Image (cartoon, rainbow, N blue to C red; front, side, top):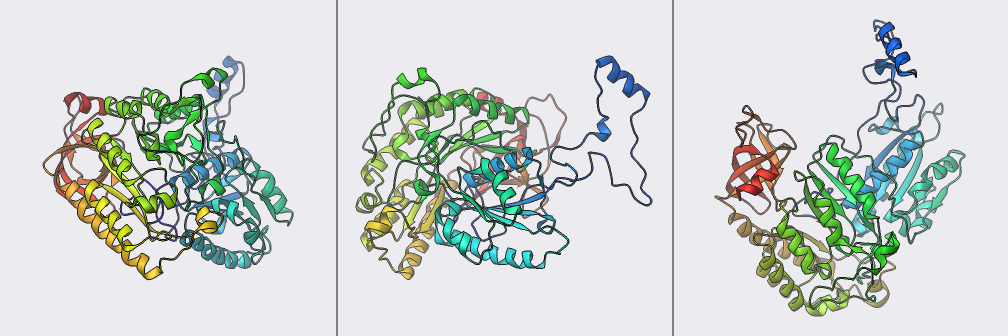
Length: 566
């Protein structure tokens, strides 16, 4: 499961469902760059002069004036689409894929809801609370649709993603509000579905695919000019954990060809992106079978003491090969990945993380429970003892590694003793980052068919509160060990709480706050200046909490120079 709704630290992921959703940047629909609409008191932009036509003639072909060249996606009269994203980071990537497809088919993007001709919600189904947020949002859109002036074409509303896959019939029939329903593997079909909806009919495509990876579609980043980006490398999941809806909403595992992933990462490097996170529901089970010669490659073994519900899959280029190739593209680009399964950490992956200065020394190891009995009911494929052995092996292999994890409390049949074993695991491992949830039963899952959701809601709430308190206590101790140390921080921008401070993240993905001041360059080759988003800054940590480090900035530097100095 990808880290999602209830987080104690936003590890680069979206906010919990139900809070204000993110939307993309507005695109101007009628005017090119540098232009303004013609009207009273507004002068026309300068047109092409004689030199412009002479240059074009010398080149042998006409060239539009830069002032008159239209902005991509700004076709006059193009229908405007408003996109909202709920849930995990995979849904953010899905939003970027859907927008890339729509942009290519003549749609414009708006961040103003009242301007939209089409509203698309990219949804989450991991927990009931996530789905309820969408039903609540649809009631607001129902009122917006009713208020729409008759002179305008009817507002079209679409549900995309996991909730669309899980609840197609209910979405289409409940109050007849939704016009388009598209599952995670049907985004290529969006232009056709919207065309059908324009004629007044409902349209749906929730077919799951065994091979769709959108490998040929370069996602349009929702935050152009940002310092970080996410690259989807595989889709679906084969693990079939008894609590999890993902295999039923996103289908079987399939991986993108490595060549297309490397192309996307190179493009992001050229755009100045300084951190890329590789995404997948089981990201480290990546297996590229796109070329015949890949099929004879030997398969790596599972982590010691781990098993799967499926037979071993022979052949294919694996995650260690991809991680090696991605990390070679840009020595100044940090590489992260999420969400892995603990079973898929062969020694070659751990060794690569330890050796490469630009692969972050931070691992997500989703435990879900500290009780072997509950883990068996969850069909996780390991015991508490095997999980702890992996934790010790990871820490021996990657000194100073930062660890994060997922936990579910109140799973079917969980006793007070099972709960206390989870509390003790939190204390023993002492994670830096945690994602903790109360269990929410999902239809179609094995737990729904075979088990009873028999832990009362008030008990789930009490146990969750105890897990949160324990996590914060231990994370505070883990982070306090960093006080006095110098951390390399990638600047993301101003702190949300103070314009006089900057915010960024260290190698362990922990948020670091420090004063915005003029800084020397570590190589002494540049004049002192203030750090900008995308800069690397050495920061001496002066205080720590369970979620944040604070410190004083020492100098600006580079990722390679910082690695060489250590």
